[in-house]
Image 1 (spheres, rainbow, N blue to C red):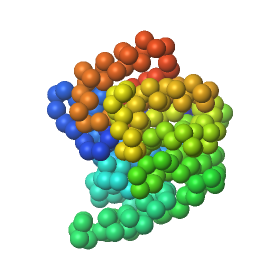
Image 2 (tube, helix red, strand yellow):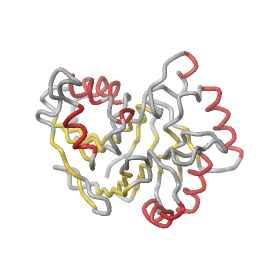
Image 3 (cartoon, one colour):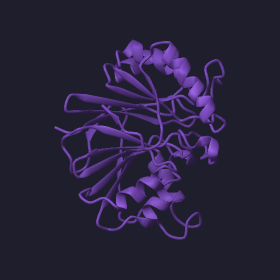
Image 4 (cartoon, rainbow, N blue to C red):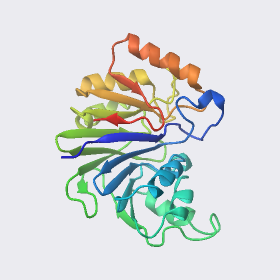
Length: 265
């Protein structure tokens, strides 16, 4: 049995942000880790992957890193540059994704970077609707769903030891696909949700959501909790604290992600 603890390393969307007004929740872009014994499972490779790499280099006992990519937009892959450049050969890196893998072959090499960063990295194509397991690890069962985001993306579900995690960044609710999404998220212990916009400020067609939409989906899917993330750059600590208070008043099972704060499933 694993004790499943999700750690957010990047909670922003679109582009990192820095400054005193953003220290409470953090300013790195999307990256979340979950340790499974000697394996480290990582959701997305935003700028938060850089501090995760610093943490990993001080850790012993983790032999492989498995990174599930939602898509190849820069805010979800820019952490690969420092991470792969500094990671030693003692750990095997696996990258999982759809069309994002083809884009990375170009992005992570000259002329965009001095050397090819995918040498020695194992690539695994994920197909929506098909279950799969991590390379070399038969315990965790994963599945993917095609997401509603400009240019396409993948959403992921992890089931292990009776616990389930559903990762839904970047997500804009699509009424036509809501039944499929509800089945995908059904009964999850934790949903990671795209709360890029404050309520009533959503921008249709941008591929993002608000905490209100996430709370509604979690209730309908019978999920226990929903973790808000992918905050817009203009949402500083004060603005997020206000949104968090609003969510608490509704009695919803919402958590607002803060970098390096563990969430146990």
